[in-house]
Image 1 (cartoon, one colour):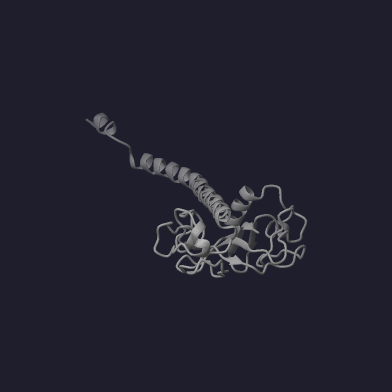
Image 2 (image 1 turned 60 degrees about the vertical axis):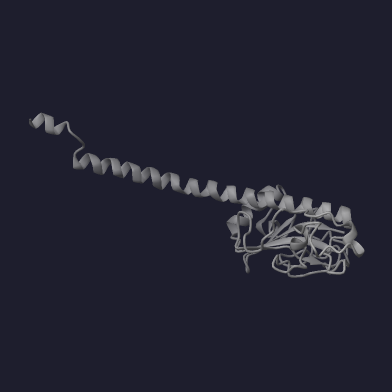
Length: 222
């Protein structure tokens, strides 16, 4: 009988040993799981940005402007980029061609939307807490130093803005982005651009302001 009882299951010491091994494996694997999840979210953000870029190009092809149309069909800069603003570009890109707002007057005649299936400021794709799509007609002067927050992008990795003065510029910016989040996105969008951290955060399509946890990504200008 004693022998039978011994064969019925693990002893307490054996159970403790098994649990200890499991705990060690979890401790080793959990950081890797979180890393994979973070990389997946970064890829989702980049995929969305590329979709935004395509939508902006299609919109420009039809209307010959990067600015959102106002109710009368006149292209008008809208600086907030908040999708809750009906006159924002993000909202206009998702507007159906048959929407009542499309009166067929002025530039509305050439509108062929929707150009984008979804753009919701409070639901950013992948990373961050919010996403905005502003339009601006006042970029910094061409060749002026591009920094983490000004409307100018160093696209050719020489330190100066490559956006001509008086251009209309469309970009997206994400709030609530950590240094690690930016590094992952930057590695996808801007591989090989910038050799130091100081250069990487201001050069290429993606810029990052550590003081505000904000990442700005260039879409187009014209």
